[in-house]
Length: 638
Image (tube, rainbow, N blue to C red; front, side, top):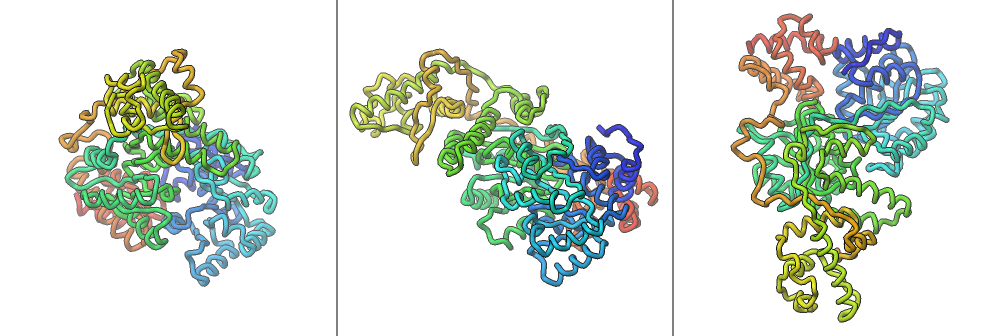
C-alpha cells in the first residue's frame, strides 16, 4: 500500500526524483516517510525487509540533497564485490556515483577522489575500513568544512551488533561519525534485527535521537517449508525437480550448507544430476568467488551452493528459492537468508531440511565458544527460538513474525498451513526415552564407571535390538530394554530430536553422548505433558514429476505468467535485447530493466515514447537511452 500523499516541498521534490530518475509513480510502504525525514536532515534507523526498497531510502535523499547544493552522500557497505553493480545501476539512471575499494588501481582511485572533491559525485560507496583511513577522512573533513557532505548511509547496519548474525568488527568504528562530522545526517538500514540487535545498533552507532522506521517483516510471496532430514541431498534434488524445474531448465536458487566441504560436495553432486550449480565459500580463491558470483548475477538458472559467506546485499530479483541443508544459527540468519528469494515480489520458496545432528551441533558450538556467558545465554535463546519455529505444528509465518514482535494470522502459504501436521501425545514415549538414558547412567556407574551413549544405541535398546554393543554393556538386562518396540527407528529419532530441541535432553562431548537436562525430571514424573509433531511416513511426498507443468508456487518466468501468446513472444524478444545490452555494459540484466517492467512493456505494447515512459521502472534517462530500441523490438515482435 502506498502512503498518504504529502504536499511538503521535500516530499514533492522526492516524488519528482522518484518518477523522473527511477520511473516509479509512488513510494511503497514507509519509503516516502523515510525519504522526507532524511531529506530534511534528520537521522533515521530503517528496518525494512529484503525486497522492500531500502536503497531508495538513501538514494532519493542523496539526489535531492545534491541538487540542493548539499554535496555527496557516502554509502557505507561491506560488499566490495557488489559495489560495481550498485554504482552501475545508478549510472544507468543518470546518477553520477562511484566506489572506492581495494579492487581499484591507484589511477582509478585517484580519479574517483578528484570527482569526490570536485563535488560532481552524488553518491560514493565505500567499505567501513576504507572510510576510516586518514586519507579519506581528510577529504571528507574538507568537504564538511565547505558544507558539501550531504548524508551518511550505513547499509547492513546489523553488522555493528555483536548480537547480530553477521557481526563485522570494522563497523564499530562508525560510532565516531556523528562526532567527526556534526550536522551530517545518518541513516542506518537493515533487513533483520530483533530487539537485542536493534538496541545494539542504536547504542554503537550513537543513534539515540534517530527516528525508528519499522516496516512489517512479512514476505507474503515466500512459502516456508521445513522437512525432517532423510537423505537430504536427494530431498533437495526432489524439491528442485518437483518445484523449480520444467522443460526449459531450472530456476535460479541458493542452497546454504554449514561447512565448506559440504558446499563443494553438494555443488558437485547437483552438477552430476544435471543441475547447474556453483560453489561459494570463504576458502575459495577470491577470483573464483568473484567469477561465480558474477555468473549467478548475470546468468539464468544458476544454483549457488554456499556458506553464509555468500548473499549479503545480493539484489538479484528472480531468485526463486533458497534452500538450507543445515540449520542456521538463529532466526535472524534464517530470515535474512530466506529473504534473498523472491525480491521481485513473485512467488518463491524457502525450504529447509533439519535433523537431530543440526540441533546437537548448534548447541555444542555455543557451549564450546570462548565467548562471555551473557553472549552464550543470548545465543542459546536465539537458537531455541529457531528450534521452536522448526518444530512448531502451527503457521510458520506467525511464529517467524512473532519473533520480531509482529502479530499476524495464519498465512495459508506455508507447509503447516497447507498440510497441517498430526500432533500426538508423546508423554509416555518421552518418559520411556528419558528413563532409558537414566538407566544407562545408573548401570554404567555400577559396572563400567560414568558412561553415556549416543542416539543410535539408545534407540536400539528402546526397540529391543540385540547388537554387539548391547551385549557388551549388558543393556539387555535393563528394564527399559524393548519397552519402545511399538515405535519405528525414524519415529524414535523424531521424538529424540524434539526432546533435544525442547531442552530435556542434552548431547555432550565429541561423540554426542546423551544426558538428561534438569527439566527432564518433571517429564519423568509425569508432571509435564509432551505433545509432539508426528513423523511423516517415509513414503509420503508432496508433488511429483507429474506436477511440474502446472506448478502454482513458483512457475519459471513468473513475471510473464499473465501474458497471452503474442505478448509472450514480445517479452522473449525484449529479454534477448536486454541480455545484449547488459553484456555490453558489463552489468546484470536486471540492472537494465526488471522482468516485471519488460512484461508490462510486452503486455501494453506502447507505440511511442510517451506511452513507454508511463510504464513503471522507465525513468527519463533510460527512456532517452533505450526508448527507440525498445519500440523497435516491440514492433518487430508484434
